[in-house]
Amino acid sequence: MNTVVDFGGRAVLVTGGTKGIGAVIARSFLEAGADVVVCGRHDPGSPPEANGRTARFLAADVRDAGAAAALVSRAAELMGRLDVLVNNAGGSPDADAATVSPRFVERVVQLNLLAPFYVAQPANAVMRAQPDGGSIINIGSVSGTDPQPGTAAYTAAKAGLLALTRALALEWSPQVRVNHITAGPVRTEADLYGEDGGAAIDGLVPMGRMAGPRDVANACLFLAGDLASYVTGADLAVHGGGEVPARYVVTRN
Image (cartoon, rainbow, N blue to C red):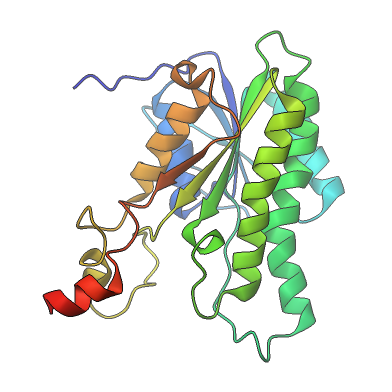
């Protein structure tokens, strides 16, 4: 099947784009011909690259509204425009809701809910001044709709991100489209899924495997591209069908 996607002449900003899922998203847009800027709190040394082209890195803590605005301004200056923003930065370690500190909760909400808004707001200002507008994609999590133990603050923030996506889509259309990806467990270089490498989780996913970072990146390419020109306020589930219901797992075993 022909899956060639052309983003030649377009400019993309990926937050948290120096490693993991974000780096693969950045490489995918580079492969498609886009100019790409990635950001993170620390210089990765080797930014994402593909087909002889390299993303530009800007240091920024997007939890700070001023830093987020400066990031967008500088990225647009470097690339001459801004067509796509992927709000990928996020995450949280597990924590017991009964004992977690207020500071921990604040930081999790800042990173997973406030930061995407802080970056989206100035990105919208740049995009709506362009004849072709732009596209904003927020990377969410199944935790936002299906809470997991140890993720109370993260779940609340990700649920808020989905609601924020829909609210911004209402306000910013038609110039700027805003969409959301609900990502399930994603197999990355980080060892997050136990000694079996996630094999037990694979068995609970209807598609028979966890997502790879490229699955999320492909969804970004679709939502940012011309094929999705009428899609805004949408939630695209990239979770392989979710999880097989527990009663079927018990019966099967």
